Length: 112
Length: 114
Image 1 (cartoon, chains in turn purple, red):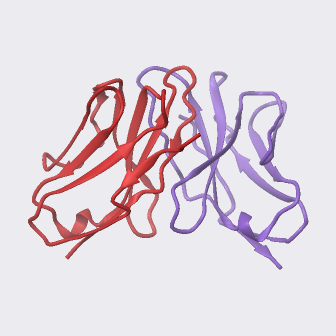
Image 2 (image 1 turned 90 degrees about the vertical axis):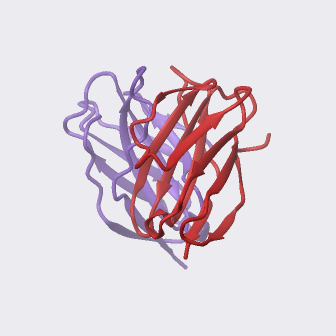
């Protein structure tokens, strides 16, 4: 699976949109971009994933650049409960490649 | 619907004792995964089940670790002769299996070996 690079930490004001970047310049054509987050002392929570089109669900939006070398997770109206470590993971869906490899992620702090 | 559940939520044991950790996956999920997370560290893959079989045991750190899954549902991770370095949060996840492999995690079991 391709390597990802994320900023170690970010702050965002409550009520504002939080935009979390991820670089994955070596991504292959069959690799998906997944986002998870981990709130302190909880298990990781799935947020969203995509291949090349932008995706939106009830939690967030995922914007993937046309060359697929980077992506941005957008939390449209951040709340204090969104304070967590956010992980960007690039992964091919294939037999024999089931495990998720979490990097160090971005520690997002929502400021009241 | 119910998510992945794990029990116990916390376990304190003495060095040398055996422990069993349980995972109940989301109903209908055929794939089940075990990870562990040591304090301040990232997630470490341990083992993966498809149905009752474990095609990938590559992450088990030693032969003191074993896991089984019965009936395609509940899984048990067993650590024999626990050591202090086994202290960690043990996380279980499940998915519908290839190709719909989004993994959903449980809350974890916090294991402390004294």
